[in-house]
Image 1 (cartoon, rainbow, N blue to C red):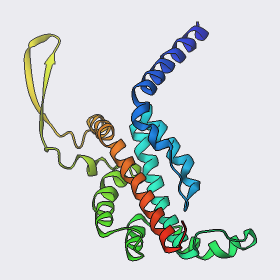
Image 2 (cartoon, rainbow, N blue to C red; image 1 turned 180 degrees about the horizontal axis):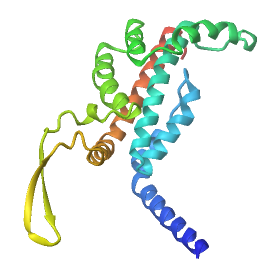
Image 3 (cartoon, rainbow, N blue to C red; image 1 turned 90 degrees about the vertical axis):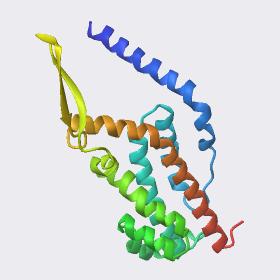
Amino acid sequence: MQVLTNIMEKEIFEKAFIENLNKNFEAHSKYFEFKFYTYPELGSSIFEINKCLILEFYRASITLTNNVLERVLKLALIYNEAGIGPKPVENWSDIFSVPNEKYGSKQLGNTIELCKKENLITESEKNILFDTIRELMRNGFSHSDPSKILKHLPDETPVYHANLSNPKEIQEIQVNYKTIPIFQSMQMDEFAKQNAFEYFKFVFELMKKIDERLKSKYNIN
């Protein structure tokens, strides 16, 4: 019986995966085609985010996109100081140790400010990163703080309660969705569904722009 149950569960997962793959692959396939000169080490994470989006794992996509964004800003600062282009392998430790120590543990707000100071991002990009991405996407998901996502909801929302012993007697109750865990989770799920892809596209395009800016600075064609 246990073997039969496992087979049925596998078939359910397999069916859902195939349906999502067929439904979503075309819209996401172009994001598998990229070539970053500056930070090729982030390629596997981009693949993973894109696969999450295809399979509709929206929270996972946002959380990993947060990780990539924080890392790419640090790498931009590291490569901006260390330079890009071929370097003798025997010198790698000396070249990267100082900038890695300087930037590797910086908080997101600091790396955003430093990237703007070094002209790795524009003023407009800085404002979006600092005021929207940092507050909503990073704090809301990576820090598990639903208040950032739900703050625009009303403090009271009507719900209707009925008792099975007297189903015709329906009572209106005012609840605060922003403070009740089950409703917080439902709202976060919906927010993730609506915003995960757009967030990934923003970070993906930003990565390309930073890559081009560093290539231009160091005359890499």
